[in-house]
Image (tube, rainbow, N blue to C red; front, side, top):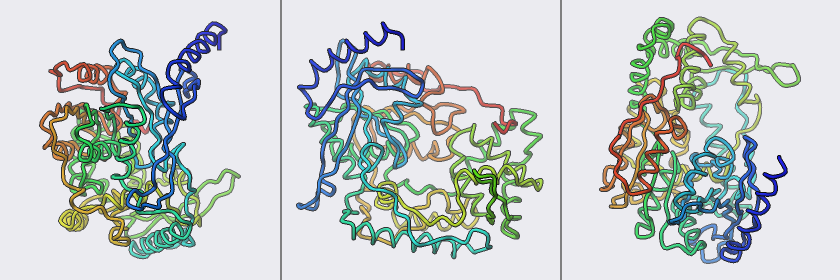
Length: 481
């Protein structure tokens, strides 16, 4: 770091310390270092919240954050960043891919990178490693496979309870109440919510609980209150949109042909005969892993989020369709260690289970899964539904939010995780909604075009957003990377 830059940062930190530390308890001035090597003067702090507010004897747990002070002349309400997942870290997001947005939004108020309960710096429990081990090199049915995970979950649930963890506290409702406590911590009457994916689910739950204390909401890739588990048929529709995109590129069109037919062929081959892979290990050895049709569906469920990942997924399907398995072996080695036990995380596992789904939606998913390409592997919590009914928040929680709070919704046409039609349905009762479509964007759309930030700026300034379509370039879908 150049000496003058270090001096400026030190002076900035001193100034911030003198003006804000006395205002907010528990904070301390820090120099916030990003992964890109940038440095910003900021504050880190925490509040303590009940693990379960329904339990009068609940222990207190931390919710930690980093606050980037406002730089604009007209300081508005604090802006809370809500990560996706559930399980993502707001602080790590500020350090990594969305740093520029955090800094830009300081024009309108303090920007708070929140690590939600049980995540990132707020995490106080380790993962649970169950005694369940899925046979790695054997051909086993889906039901046998799921049995290991269901038993593993019940083991972890019992272990968490025995360790004094109040499992009923890890819900989106409690998460929303944490945000309201943060609002009070900052002495603010209102707050601005800025979230993506699960963060939008949390934002909508907060609207339902604390409507009068929310100034405005910015969400992208929205996940509605009854949309934790996705509809399989809508993923098939997503592949139709991918096909339309691929058809605009002659090389990709020639390479993949009919995408849905290719996917179906590969699944049928793997159903008939799973492939024994040799997964490369760090020490140079290999481990056997039997690759089933469901493994491919699991991979696809995670890789349909964005066009760049989808093109890698299509390349894998194309390789398997032609009998080539090496790309799959290398990828699986990054995520799976054969013979490792089934593991669960308190926050990410319980949040999804608590949000759940209505009986009608569950029945529809079961019916659609019989014929859809990815079946019911889009969200694994579907397979744990009903194992712990005491955790379920109920259909009242899953009702859509209805409010006249200004809401900006940003949706990508090639988002394979939260589909554009589902996002519009989830927010249809928000009377003051501005919906912006980002053509060729996927799930992670915030940083794809300067026009996204420009649109957010207009929204924050109460100016009309007249351009409701943003077009970004489609990557070359014929390339694996």
